[in-house]
Image (cartoon, rainbow over all chains, first blue to last red; front, side, top):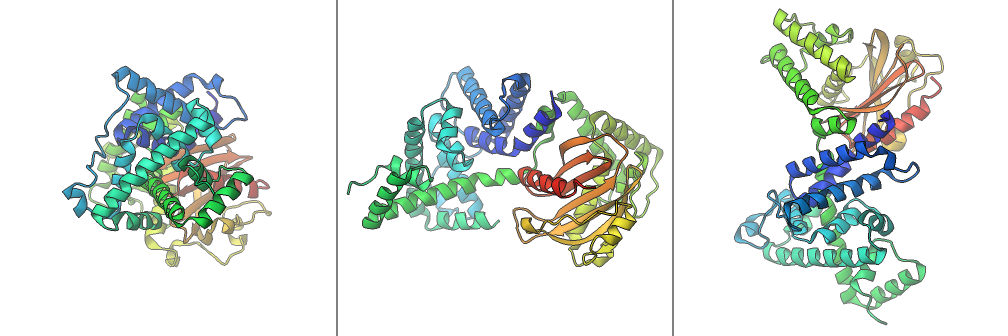
Length: 180
Length: 286
């Protein structure tokens, strides 16, 4: 293993953790996933093509390992233990702090089907282009567009419902989070 | 005009449409208030989603993941953690956490000049520190990173106005730093203003037996935060930029053409990586 390969891998770890957190909905499970992805990447360094984006290659590995794990468990949908918050419940009505509101956003994302969640995380959170996201997911760009539209629509609708029930907590939470 | 689908509207918001499609959506938005409100809701949702996960980037990366990325075995990581914990417990007791830093440094051949007092250590603690030094040597890590991190914390806690921490003031052009740290005549302070970082002063250290200087920068950019840069001489071979971290601090260190460098800060490692590239480019003449 070359030092530069390892250095690139270390440098991309924070973003891999963020992507994995979004996929799994759990901090512990996300780190397990990233660790497994690192091990797989190190065993397949020869498959990385110099001149291509290293982060995209790693996102693909994380996604592949995650799908493998889901298949091994015999399920396509895993509920998050960290963010299992019932949007719109009496409890959430009382919850007005920005940090908690953002956790509720994570809870909404966790309810999406895996394919939509992957598209949402790669494009909206990681800022990849549709083409890059399509290559990682192994689907046409048009499929990414439709998955993204369904995901964004579902999130917007659920957050709108929650906002109506909790007042303006969500709008304030974005501003708070961005100034943290 | 036909109302664009959500797919097209979101692609427009994401900047993914070609000119003709973009103009069509802009015309539709201009003519349809309900569509504008819908687009705003989608945009708000996207902003919230990004904000919901941004906190992960500010967390320190667990040791086991760094080790996994470097291909180190889990047992080594565990041993390093245990040794580090034991070392701090025995050395520091109830004292402030940074008091024991020079002890560890002296035992691995690093002497740091400055305001810290030397603390006598027991045989037991010396054994533990020696054990840690051996572990550090094995893992390519070193206690000089601990010291740099400790001074960075001290600087951040004291604030840039505490001039007692600085051996060289911020208004020096680099001459005093160059002389004190025995750096080459063409040494110039790295200009990090494009990153929003302002030079606040420097301390003179000895790293790996060689004079070095620790430069402090501050910024109003909360996502970047204060930054420390260490520049010194080194007789060790060149080393590619290497990532490490101490508690909530990220660090990058490298050696190039007889000089050792390290940057420390709480910023995301990607940020540090880019700044390190800039510094390496600016200091390449050294």
